[in-house]
Amino acid sequence: MIRDNYLDISKLTTSPQVLALFKLFARHGGVLRFVGGAVRDALKGLKGSDLDLATDLSPEEIAEACADEGIKTVPLGIKQGAIGVVIDDILLQVSSLYKYVLQENGPAEIEFTDNWEEDASRRDLTINAVYADEQGNVFDYYNGIEDLEKGRVHFIGSATARIHEDYIRILRYFRFYSLFGVGQPDTQALKACQENCAGLKKVPMERIRDELFKIVQTPEAPRIYRLMQDNGILSYIMPDAAHIDDLEFLNKIIPGHEIANAALVKLFVLYCPDEALAENLAVRLKFSRREKQLFTALAKEKLSFDDLLNDKMRLKIIYSHGCDFYCASLLAVAARKQECPKEMWFYYDGAASLPRPVFPITGKDLINGGLTDKSRIGRVLKELEQLWLDSDFDLTKEQLLIQVDNLKSVV
Image (cartoon, rainbow, N blue to C red; front, side, top):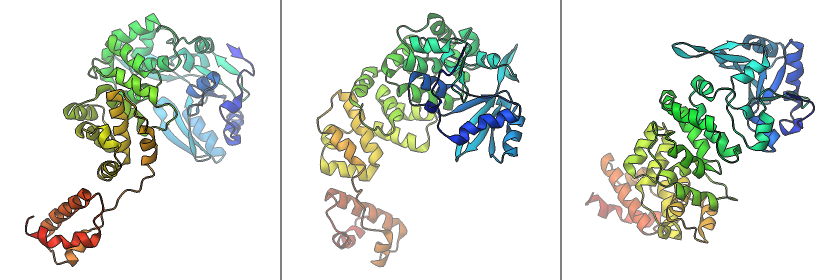
């Protein structure tokens, strides 16, 4: 259960200020430990997740201890025992130990505890319930280290009980199985996910979206998405994705490249939606305005490699829709065609550094030229812009202004 000096603490943090928190909490009668993803990833030799910490002090005692030392705190969720502690302008989440108490006719309620094993017992997976102190001593109450080493992804105790505490754990199971699982999924875990997937309807769509975004960005996302679909996991919240093979191809060609908007692009590739489905998915998953604009534009604009790999067309696309749209379109077309032209990555990697053309005419220019009708100014500007685009951005301001008198009579 306890492994002395097992973890090189520098894999978690080298910040003296963060490490000083352990002594601060000890002075106030508490114990502080790293927990969760950062510990798991450090044990696996991966780049760490955001630091989370746990303590046997109450939320009020955490805030009081930090205030005594002049350390700023932010309430993140007092009912859940979470306090944000600001160190070097970084917000660390420190949570009081707690356990879930299931109610007969309602959701599980939180009850604070000073028992570390009880806190571990309410976490979802064994690999996420490993703690470490500032000395590198590791506290493993549910065999998480061995499971991590052997690629086993297990719920703690009853899979059904853990899922009933929070149905988002269904998607979290598949995400961590994608990242760390070896061989077939745990039979009991898969069965519990199948039997309880209707519970995902109770989960806020923002949380589901965030988990789906994380899942599609894992290297094994195509295999995991097939597994979820074959077992009906997403049937209550999402249509079936018909283009998993396209995502598999995309994952083969992107290593070594920095991918912008990766989650959004990969989700688009999975569904290759028409305009109606793209709008539906964007609304259903509560995309931000920018995400929705990009997602629906990918469905609306029917581009090809002939468009995207042509220097003049590339500039027009970037001018009209932006660099993010251009790069996302390249990946979407490559995935759909399952083809990667040799020059594609040259165009992709170079798109961000291309100077975006600037339309040289403004409404003020037209007013100075004697056009005062505001509704006509907008129409003339639009016509001039189209002339400029048709000239491949060659027409100068002076050449465009010469056209204004001709346009006044037709718009």
